[in-house]
Image (cartoon, rainbow, N blue to C red):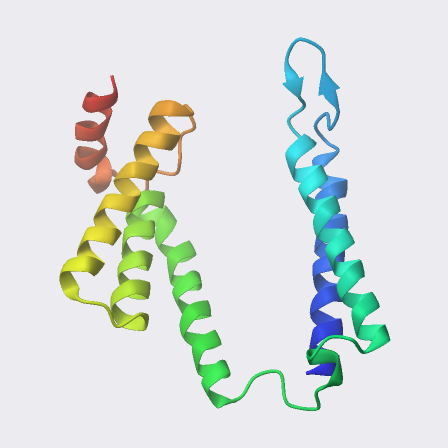
Length: 167
């Protein structure tokens, strides 16, 4: 557990540094008359994450967190099983984006997560997995004017109905 805490903080710190560097491709400061530049939020959120990783490493060094005092393994058999099931679901989600669209992949992932992993009822699982992608569609496509990947052509009829509602 002790090593796992430090390794996780280190990996997240490296990710923070990369995201901070990458976000500087866009302006990260305030642009007069426009507001924050396109890279401002990613840069500053990554900076906050880097500071948090530093705090985790400092607490690890002091031995003040429960994980820094533990000799237990990071993951037991249940933890590995859960990691594989959730990680497999995320890999499936990413693989489905180009096939059934971002929103279709969200629906499938939510159904898998709520029904199969969460062991909730079928009605609740279907409701969450159908309402959430539709709400996200109206938020991103309608309110934010950000187009998400639409997948293969067989998904177009569903999007045409939703676009008719927006426009």
